[in-house]
Image 1 (cartoon, rainbow, N blue to C red):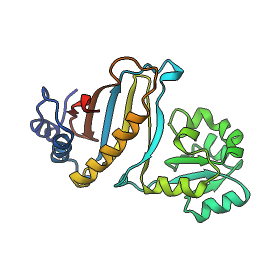
Image 2 (cartoon, helix red, strand yellow):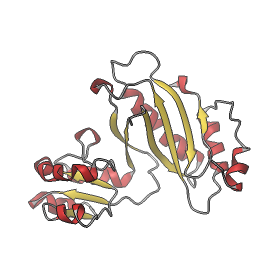
Image 3 (cartoon, rainbow, N blue to C red):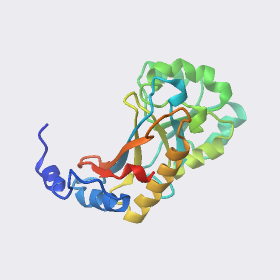
Length: 229
């Protein structure tokens, strides 16, 4: 894969053979951000889990102390008083059954997170084939299937991110924006690592976190010492 001039220049800042302390890695990632837009900073964690086993799945959510730097659009599936509560709490879209054809047939996906009250999951379940592959299905572990829609919306808007294991046993999660200060990125990094450490399945044998790297949307990855966690 051929990289552009900016990527090549940014890559010169990073020693590929070195594994860095988290603070050093964050500073390097900020220096290597060269795009004209405010790049997203992402964390990639390779685990020793086996996602084929149900007891080795990892899924959860954490509110990043410094937020994500992104405006998040929230869709809430609720009815009656809960729908009114969701609107009052600042949900961008609120609805029920009538949204099914809009999403299924018209391909409407102008939202980033879906929250649902438990009584609406039979409706939302019909959207599994559309929302599932995009990682948008509400889930109790992520706090997006709940009766407390006010708290769910507040947490999401404040910078809540979901982390989950993919088929290659890697967790990819947003850490913030390249415009954040090093302190803000470290705050978010520490909160995420703490949550992922606590989420370790008891059935995992051997090393839990095999490698950690951090990168901006368009920049090269920087490896972080994994055995600190």
